[in-house]
Length: 217
Ligand code: GRF
Image (tube, rainbow, N blue to C red; front, side, top):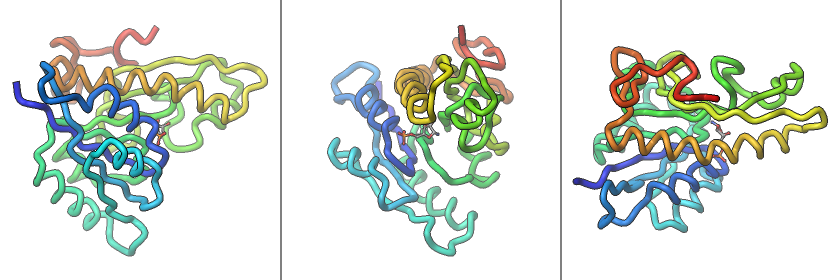
Protein backbone atom coordinates (compact mmCIF):
# COMPACT_ATOMS: atom_id res chain seq x y z
CA UNK A 1 0.00 0.00 0.00
CA UNK A 2 1.21 3.49 -0.83
CA UNK A 3 2.27 5.78 1.98
CA UNK A 4 -0.57 8.20 2.73
CA UNK A 5 0.33 11.86 2.58
CA UNK A 6 -0.80 14.42 5.14
CA UNK A 7 -0.53 18.22 5.18
CA UNK A 8 -0.97 19.94 8.56
CA UNK A 9 -1.92 23.61 8.92
CA UNK A 10 -0.97 25.37 12.14
CA UNK A 11 -0.72 28.81 13.72
CA UNK A 12 0.74 28.31 17.16
CA UNK A 13 2.26 25.94 19.68
CA UNK A 14 1.56 22.83 17.63
CA UNK A 15 1.04 20.37 20.47
CA UNK A 16 -1.54 18.62 18.28
CA UNK A 17 0.97 18.61 15.44
CA UNK A 18 3.40 16.89 17.84
CA UNK A 19 0.84 14.19 18.65
CA UNK A 20 0.21 13.73 14.91
CA UNK A 21 3.96 13.46 14.25
CA UNK A 22 4.33 10.80 16.94
CA UNK A 23 1.38 8.70 15.78
CA UNK A 24 1.20 9.28 12.02
CA UNK A 25 4.63 10.24 10.73
CA UNK A 26 5.70 6.65 10.38
CA UNK A 27 8.58 4.94 8.62
CA UNK A 28 7.77 3.90 5.08
CA UNK A 29 8.24 0.18 5.69
CA UNK A 30 5.24 0.11 8.11
CA UNK A 31 2.03 -1.35 6.77
CA UNK A 32 -0.51 1.43 6.38
CA UNK A 33 2.27 3.98 6.68
CA UNK A 34 1.56 7.68 6.56
CA UNK A 35 3.79 10.68 6.30
CA UNK A 36 3.36 14.34 7.11
CA UNK A 37 4.68 15.76 3.87
CA UNK A 38 4.28 19.44 4.75
CA UNK A 39 3.45 21.73 7.66
CA UNK A 40 2.15 25.18 6.73
CA UNK A 41 1.86 28.00 9.25
CA UNK A 42 0.28 31.40 8.74
CA UNK A 43 2.42 32.68 11.59
CA UNK A 44 6.21 32.83 11.27
CA UNK A 45 6.61 32.66 15.09
CA UNK A 46 4.59 29.48 15.55
CA UNK A 47 6.46 27.03 17.78
CA UNK A 48 4.94 24.24 15.70
CA UNK A 49 7.44 25.15 12.97
CA UNK A 50 10.25 24.16 15.33
CA UNK A 51 8.49 20.87 16.00
CA UNK A 52 8.28 20.22 12.25
CA UNK A 53 11.93 21.13 11.80
CA UNK A 54 12.99 18.84 14.67
CA UNK A 55 11.10 15.97 13.02
CA UNK A 56 12.71 16.83 9.67
CA UNK A 57 9.36 17.60 8.11
CA UNK A 58 9.16 20.13 5.31
CA UNK A 59 7.55 23.32 6.60
CA UNK A 60 6.78 26.75 5.30
CA UNK A 61 5.14 29.99 6.30
CA UNK A 62 2.39 31.54 4.24
CA UNK A 63 2.01 34.68 6.27
CA UNK A 64 -1.34 36.27 6.85
CA UNK A 65 0.41 39.40 8.15
CA UNK A 66 0.06 41.01 4.74
CA UNK A 67 -2.76 42.73 2.93
CA UNK A 68 -3.34 39.68 0.80
CA UNK A 69 -7.05 38.94 0.27
CA UNK A 70 -8.64 35.78 1.72
CA UNK A 71 -9.07 34.37 -1.79
CA UNK A 72 -5.42 35.03 -2.65
CA UNK A 73 -4.38 33.38 0.61
CA UNK A 74 -6.40 30.28 -0.17
CA UNK A 75 -4.91 30.23 -3.68
CA UNK A 76 -1.40 30.10 -2.17
CA UNK A 77 -2.47 27.17 0.00
CA UNK A 78 -4.00 25.48 -3.05
CA UNK A 79 -0.71 25.68 -4.95
CA UNK A 80 1.05 23.75 -2.17
CA UNK A 81 -1.75 21.22 -1.85
CA UNK A 82 -1.94 20.56 -5.58
CA UNK A 83 1.82 20.10 -5.72
CA UNK A 84 1.79 17.39 -3.08
CA UNK A 85 -1.66 15.82 -3.62
CA UNK A 86 -2.18 14.89 0.05
CA UNK A 87 -4.67 12.22 1.10
CA UNK A 88 -5.63 14.26 4.16
CA UNK A 89 -5.42 17.89 5.31
CA UNK A 90 -5.46 18.48 9.06
CA UNK A 91 -6.15 21.86 10.64
CA UNK A 92 -4.36 21.84 13.98
CA UNK A 93 -4.92 25.18 15.65
CA UNK A 94 -4.97 27.00 12.29
CA UNK A 95 -6.38 30.42 13.16
CA UNK A 96 -7.59 31.51 9.76
CA UNK A 97 -10.97 31.26 8.17
CA UNK A 98 -10.82 29.36 4.90
CA UNK A 99 -13.01 30.54 2.04
CA UNK A 100 -16.01 28.63 0.78
CA UNK A 101 -14.48 27.62 -2.61
CA UNK A 102 -11.41 26.23 -0.84
CA UNK A 103 -13.52 24.29 1.64
CA UNK A 104 -15.78 22.98 -1.11
CA UNK A 105 -12.72 21.73 -2.97
CA UNK A 106 -11.03 19.98 -0.05
CA UNK A 107 -13.73 19.48 2.61
CA UNK A 108 -14.10 15.77 1.83
CA UNK A 109 -10.51 15.23 3.05
CA UNK A 110 -10.06 17.97 5.64
CA UNK A 111 -10.50 17.61 9.40
CA UNK A 112 -10.30 20.14 12.23
CA UNK A 113 -9.99 19.83 15.98
CA UNK A 114 -12.02 22.26 18.05
CA UNK A 115 -11.71 22.75 21.82
CA UNK A 116 -15.35 22.26 22.85
CA UNK A 117 -18.13 19.72 22.72
CA UNK A 118 -19.65 20.94 19.48
CA UNK A 119 -22.21 22.26 18.72
CA UNK A 120 -21.55 24.07 22.00
CA UNK A 121 -19.01 26.89 22.00
CA UNK A 122 -18.16 27.37 18.37
CA UNK A 123 -15.59 30.12 17.81
CA UNK A 124 -12.88 31.30 20.21
CA UNK A 125 -12.28 31.48 23.99
CA UNK A 126 -14.15 28.23 24.47
CA UNK A 127 -12.56 27.34 27.83
CA UNK A 128 -13.34 30.71 29.43
CA UNK A 129 -16.90 30.63 28.10
CA UNK A 130 -17.48 27.13 29.46
CA UNK A 131 -16.16 28.18 32.90
CA UNK A 132 -18.22 31.39 32.87
CA UNK A 133 -21.34 29.36 32.15
CA UNK A 134 -20.62 27.02 35.09
CA UNK A 135 -20.54 24.00 32.79
CA UNK A 136 -19.73 20.73 34.51
CA UNK A 137 -18.17 19.18 31.44
CA UNK A 138 -16.26 20.38 28.41
CA UNK A 139 -14.03 18.74 25.83
CA UNK A 140 -12.87 18.61 22.24
CA UNK A 141 -14.36 17.59 18.91
CA UNK A 142 -12.84 16.36 15.66
CA UNK A 143 -15.01 17.28 12.70
CA UNK A 144 -14.98 17.52 8.93
CA UNK A 145 -14.53 21.08 7.72
CA UNK A 146 -17.49 22.73 6.03
CA UNK A 147 -17.98 26.35 4.95
CA UNK A 148 -19.86 27.09 8.19
CA UNK A 149 -17.15 27.55 10.83
CA UNK A 150 -16.92 24.84 13.51
CA UNK A 151 -20.11 23.33 12.19
CA UNK A 152 -19.08 20.33 10.09
CA UNK A 153 -20.10 16.73 10.87
CA UNK A 154 -18.50 15.57 14.11
CA UNK A 155 -16.31 12.47 13.98
CA UNK A 156 -15.20 11.98 17.57
CA UNK A 157 -15.47 13.87 20.85
CA UNK A 158 -13.70 13.57 24.18
CA UNK A 159 -15.21 14.89 27.40
CA UNK A 160 -13.41 16.28 30.43
CA UNK A 161 -14.84 17.47 33.73
CA UNK A 162 -14.75 21.11 34.81
CA UNK A 163 -13.95 21.44 38.52
CA UNK A 164 -15.22 24.34 40.64
CA UNK A 165 -11.82 25.99 41.04
CA UNK A 166 -10.60 25.44 37.46
CA UNK A 167 -8.90 28.23 35.58
CA UNK A 168 -8.46 28.44 31.81
CA UNK A 169 -4.90 27.07 31.88
CA UNK A 170 -5.92 23.98 33.86
CA UNK A 171 -8.95 23.31 31.74
CA UNK A 172 -7.08 23.90 28.49
CA UNK A 173 -4.34 21.44 29.55
CA UNK A 174 -6.99 18.81 30.37
CA UNK A 175 -8.66 19.30 26.98
CA UNK A 176 -5.32 19.23 25.12
CA UNK A 177 -4.47 15.84 26.63
CA UNK A 178 -7.65 14.43 25.13
CA UNK A 179 -7.12 16.19 21.81
CA UNK A 180 -3.78 14.45 21.43
CA UNK A 181 -5.61 11.11 21.56
CA UNK A 182 -8.69 11.72 19.45
CA UNK A 183 -7.10 13.68 16.60
CA UNK A 184 -4.51 11.07 15.53
CA UNK A 185 -7.12 8.33 15.99
CA UNK A 186 -9.64 10.10 13.75
CA UNK A 187 -6.93 10.73 11.16
CA UNK A 188 -5.98 7.04 11.21
CA UNK A 189 -9.61 6.10 10.61
CA UNK A 190 -9.67 8.40 7.60
CA UNK A 191 -6.37 7.21 6.17
CA UNK A 192 -7.36 3.56 6.48
CA UNK A 193 -10.58 4.24 4.58
CA UNK A 194 -12.86 3.63 7.57
CA UNK A 195 -13.94 7.27 7.90
CA UNK A 196 -15.56 9.15 5.03
CA UNK A 197 -17.68 12.18 4.32
CA UNK A 198 -20.70 10.94 2.41
CA UNK A 199 -23.53 13.24 1.32
CA UNK A 200 -22.62 15.68 4.09
CA UNK A 201 -22.49 13.02 6.82
CA UNK A 202 -19.50 11.56 8.64
CA UNK A 203 -19.52 7.81 8.13
CA UNK A 204 -17.45 5.24 9.99
CA UNK A 205 -17.33 1.72 8.54
CA UNK A 206 -20.22 2.65 6.22
CA UNK A 207 -22.46 3.79 9.09
CA UNK A 208 -23.59 7.37 9.58
CA UNK A 209 -22.21 8.74 12.85
CA UNK A 210 -24.46 10.41 15.42
CA UNK A 211 -24.39 14.20 15.55
CA UNK A 212 -21.88 14.10 18.41
CA UNK A 213 -19.69 11.57 16.62
CA UNK A 214 -18.53 8.10 17.54
CA UNK A 215 -19.38 6.73 21.01
CA UNK A 216 -18.86 10.00 22.85
CA UNK A 217 -19.64 8.44 26.23
C1 GRF B 1 -6.32 23.31 20.21
O1 GRF B 1 -6.96 23.49 21.43
C2 GRF B 1 -7.30 23.03 19.11
O2 GRF B 1 -8.48 22.42 19.55
C3 GRF B 1 -7.64 24.42 18.61
O3 GRF B 1 -6.45 25.15 18.71
C4 GRF B 1 -5.64 24.58 19.72
C5 GRF B 1 -4.29 24.31 19.10
O4 GRF B 1 -3.35 23.90 20.05
N1 GRF B 1 -8.18 24.38 17.27
P1 GRF B 1 -1.92 23.41 19.58
O5 GRF B 1 -1.31 24.53 18.75
O6 GRF B 1 -2.11 22.16 18.79
O7 GRF B 1 -1.17 23.18 20.85
